[in-house]
Amino acid sequence: MAKKEKKNMKKLWEKNGSQNITAENYCFSRNTELDNNLIFQDALGSIAHAQMLSEIGILTHDEFVKLKKCLLEIIQLAKSSKFSVEKNDEDVHTKIEQYLTEKLGESGKKIHTGRSRNDQILLDLRLYTKEKLLKIATQTLCIIDTFINFAQKYEFVPMPGYTHMQKAMPSSVGMWGSSFAESLIDDLFFLKTAYEINDQSPLGSGAAYGVTLPIDRELTAKLLGFAKVQNNSLYAQVSRGKSHLIVAQALSQIMLTFSRFAQDILLFSTQEFDFFKIDSSFCTGSSIMPQKKNLDLAEMIRARSFAVLSYSQMIATIISSLPSGYNADFGETKFPLMESINITLSTIDVLNIFIPIIKPNEKKLIDACTPEIYATHQAYILVKQGMPFRNAYKQVGQSLNQLKNFDPKKMLRISKHVGGTGNLGISNLKKIYVKNLNWWKLKQYKFTVAISELMKGQLYE
Image 1 (cartoon, rainbow, N blue to C red):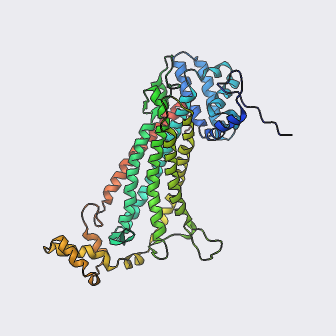
Image 2: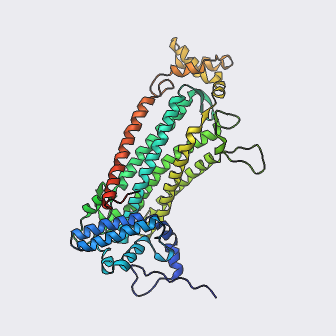
Image 3: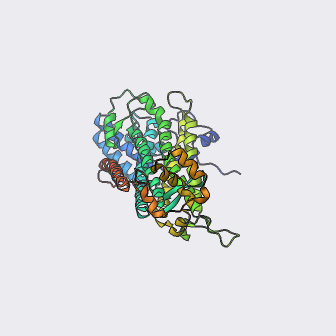
């Protein structure tokens, strides 16, 4: 005899009948798993909403106090793994509302006044994303700082520059390292835009068309630490997938920088190049070849960069051609958004311990600076003597077997224009880094203060 399935918890929308179990599982099974990441955010949103309802007279002050106490209790229970969203709960909103109703009776039934699950999940995901973006930015800044210090330390260690995978012109380990720092600074600029678009409160937009109660959307936005209210109720709903896409695209830019770094370090640490030494603790081995030391870490970073790109495309595909108003399709953007965030965070975490252990093999790097990389410089010597560049180019090109060798370290200092090997602008990079650091610290501080105040002394972690 088949095992009897546990009866589903009554849905918030359920009236005179229950849903087909197979259909319900198809629609909600993954959703309930993901919603365990949103318990804290949903409880916070409910505290702010309840406070607003008490301000406009829907809840009494006593009802608000009891609801807030119960919601803080849910947060603590969730932290100790004693409160979770299960398959039969449908979603985090149902779980929390029914918990409040069981504990407080009629007061619990009032918590949903002036809200839809549509603006609830929008709010939860905005709060979740905001918190994660602050963490991603802070950790990315650590990597930027590491690359800047790496570039400064090895500023004048010669390294061949490559185009088309062939030796091209003189470069340096400092130029290589600082290129990643500058790339990530640009990526953070993109992330700032994503953060600011996300930093709008959708609470009060209801099911896309507002409500006929005198709710105070500005109050809830302020209580939850948002920069502003997202004005148009319809746009608030349809922006759900769009804001997720913008965030995923910003994360994909960061991951693309990491992918280039991973590809470079895989290539330059091979025995054929041997430009960089990697601590063996970051390498794996082969089940058949005893000598192998494989840098799987860099390969996985490269692969997971493509995963974030694919999640970005998944979100774009899901929301394309949807009509105005809420559509259940939006629920399918939750998974790729969360996975993109998780992958980016875990990649940043490992790179923050990996990058500092990379050591340039200076002898190999200098030996690799063979005469052909100075061909253009020899043409410039003729240019300085008055010869047109095209003639100098042709003369040097016809005598490549007679190319002179130059002192690799001295050559690096000759290119003194902005961004050249002799003028990487590292001091300016440090100033830009500090400016970015202060911007993100201020955002973190304001958010932390708002949430701490909302919880009345409860620490926000």
